[in-house]
Amino acid sequence: MKDLASLCRGFTDLTEVQISLLVRMSVVFPFIADLAHGQLQLYVRPREANRLLVAAQVQPHTVYSIGVTDETGLLRQSLEEPLVVDTFRDGQRRQGKREWNYGAMVDMYTFAIHDGPHVIAVVAFAVDGERLSIEGYHHLLDTAVDVLEYARRGVPAEPWRSLSASDGVIITDARSRIVFADAAAQRIYRVLGVGNLRGCYLYDRQLSQHITRETVERDRPWQKEQLAGGMILIRRELTLSTGGTVQRRIVIVSDVTETRAKDKEIRIKLAVIQEIHHRVKNNLQTIASLLRLQARRSPSQDVKAALAESVNRILSISVVHEFLSQQGSEDIDVQEVMRHIFELVAHNMADAQFTIHTEFSGPRLILPSKCASSVALVLNELVINAMEHAFEGRKSGTIGLRVEDAPTEWHLDLYDDGVGLPPDFAQRPRRSLGLQIARTLIEGDLGGTFELANDPRGREHGTHAYICIPKDQPNPTDN
Image 1 (tube, helix red, strand yellow):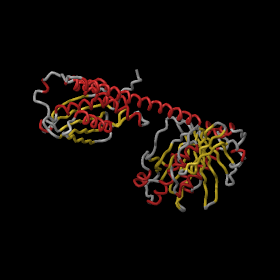
Image 2 (image 1 turned 30 degrees about the vertical axis):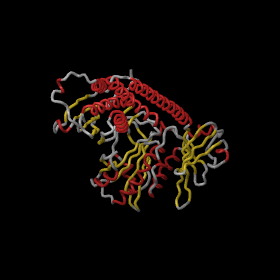
Image 3 (image 1 turned 45 degrees about the vertical axis):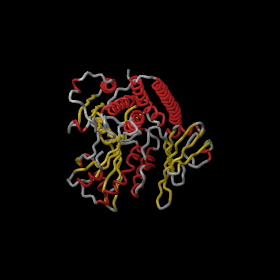
């Protein structure tokens, strides 16, 4: 939706104070559109004569709308909206009919927003009254207008958040006597043994006798969670008052029993999954320990080197499972995994006299666990390869990871400041298992590209491994 303040500044002669008033009131637009079960449009007078500007438009969440276009920012002929023009002229609320789509008519209600004696804007509700058929609908409409007027003083947005079609709405008068309760509210309280809400007082014992537990959040005093009759209810109470005197109360009741049950089920499943990842990590580390023991007993240096590489590959995968066992998400921060891999490789492969420096730059790269395992193994192979070949004859070196966020793909640049690739590297037979693993995982598993090259400034500036990973990764359950 286009910015209300910008439209008013660009097309109207409204003052900054008047624009600020409209912006404050717009906080409740979604709520009152839901309450009135109708499309809300805010009209202001532009500088151009005989025109009306649609400065804001909100669709309700409580009724189904089809084929509705956003007219925000549209300049309309005044002749097309006679009810709006009449309300601008005398400030009186209007009710009439308006043509909707292809001759279909809807009810239209218009209300003025005043700044002193001047009408600065008109709010219009377009309501399909025939299909809506709500007994006592005028209570909803009157309450929506009262909420709009109440918002002139400035209200926080959260208590006045949007409604859903399943929310029950209860409205009381100044004495807290219920004058309106919709079908959803009646259905919820019928389960609690209350036959008819209308005429009851909001704080009657009859309405609260089945509540067995009530929780109030400190930062949300207007909202309670109640356990009643085997149901879990969220009760939002909003009070409209003027000068300390209550004008009416609005109570929104939501049955969240099924949602809470699903949340509990998800938490249990998540705990089980985290425990599985923890056990997988432990098993991988046990396997790595067995391979270390085997390496110590082997007299062959080639066997020792091969087993050491296998240990690093296993541990790089265990790093991913360690992250998954410690967090609730199935997504992995690749930079954090990389830091752990650096530590593992430096601990297992670097000489005590060698110092390795690490660098990270670019945005955080968050990948699903399936992709992260492959990326972790690739980075492990590349770091091992750099440690073995890039810093020969040196006492220190730098390995870095640079991440770039492109519209459809991630670009990774793993680089070092070592001796670079030999001139005949491209002609050499590909015998490095680590590079074969890296290329296979990137191109085959992740559908990306892999390239190994010297720094553009020259071989003496080190080597770059350029990795491109598409953001749209296939879901392993699709097949």
